[in-house]
Image (cartoon, rainbow, N blue to C red; front, top):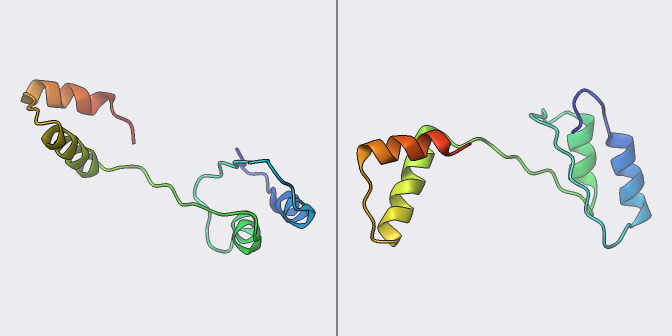
Length: 89
């Protein structure tokens, strides 16, 4: 987790080294386009910046409906509400 630290120089160094058979994941929260860490990942040929956004209640309801339809299942409103409370973003 990057937090308030910047790993941009480290990303630049690793990108230049051509490290093989290694995956490093940096969780950084919301990064602005001008963030040094985001810029470093986007310019490196061996790195990538992936935006991950939390699902909305609407997204989760659609996912639930789609999966239930595929499985040819039904769910009560109480069960739906309970399931929704257990699903994370």
